Length: 140
Length: 202
Image 1 (cartoon, chains in turn green, purple):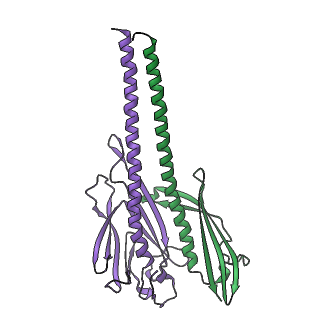
Image 2: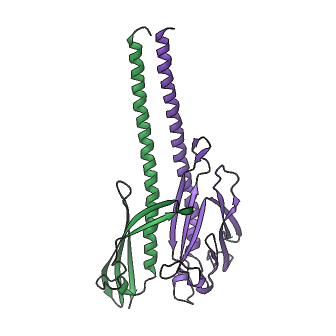
Image 3: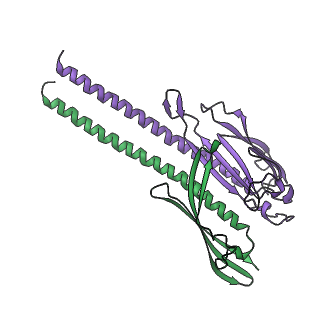
């Protein structure tokens, strides 16, 4: 080492390397988070889709009529759904499921309702949510 | 010894170790992301078949005899899965066998999920998919678990796929990226009023 200039070059190189590594680590972290979020979104979507599947087979209007609260399917909503996955329930994920039904029209012996299912997972920031709309027609 | 050379060796050594560690982390992260993507691809292929099969359980037959076997790891059902093929109603079997491990991957948790059923216009064959977990649960109309087959209205499928190679090596411990999936199906034929016959596919 002849003078302090060599040391200065080395310090500059190390700072540059640190900045580059930080950037790379940040990029990977972002990609990982996106990937985790995509998987959680898929699980939220499955819960919402299961709710819609359940609605498909309802054939009495009082279950989805919000002004008849006794039999109303969403009277206790929002509910917490804790899903466990894997052998010995290795993974757990908690979702809040909101359900809402809205009367659209009553025409020629059929009633149409607009049902909205909203599933949210608050363990992520920003939270993950899925909206599904379903139009249900029931004859009477 | 020249103090300058010693200092250069020390600083250069620290730099080299940091660089190697960083390089190792980048490789592991790339490996993890790549395997995560591959898991998604594998899962999508498998789900396409599972969704088609499970939504069409009992298609074309009387609902009371649609499911012939129902255990947590296997199901046998009758269905006319492909309306335009050479077959009418055939038996379709899905089963997960932990005595049938996948030998061509380094992941020891991989086992074959096997499907036996119609897969084309004129063929019934066996397809095998490497998965690490497959579980079936059966529900009645009130969403309660049931083992009584005529009462089954919904079937929940739980699936985990893990990467074939470990991406983080720590001694002998390898970590495998996994993808979990769970869905409750309400097949049309199991839910329509009894004795009704489905005449069109979903």
